[in-house]
View (cartoon, rainbow, N blue to C red):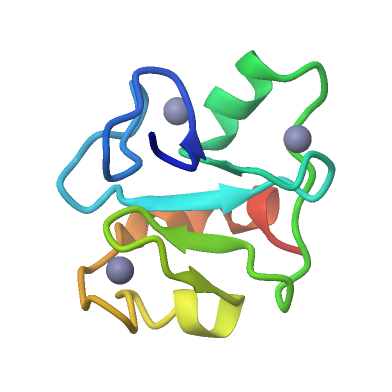
Length: 99
Ligand SMILES: [Zn+2]
Ligand SMILES: [Zn+2]
Ligand SMILES: [Zn+2]
C-alpha cells in the first residue's frame, strides 16, 4: 500500500490527473499531515482545501523510494536518495503546496 493518497494512484504516486513518467512526488497537506499525489486528489478526497506545508516540514516525498524532502531538496529537481527526476512543471503550483 502506498503512503501517497490519491485517485487511481499507482505505486510511484502518479494519479488520474498527473501521470507522466516523472510525476512521482507526493505533497503533504499541513492540515491532515498526509501525502497526496496532487492537490486535486486531496480536495476531492478530503473535506477541506489543500493547506500549504512549511518548507522545512518535509512537504514532499519521492513516490519511488518514499524518501521525504524539505523544499530545498525537492527544488533540486530530482530525488537525493534514488536520483529519479521530478516533473519541472510542478513549479507553477508551488503556491498551493508550500508556504
Ligand atoms: Zn488536508
Ligand atoms: Zn491527482
Ligand atoms: Zn527517490
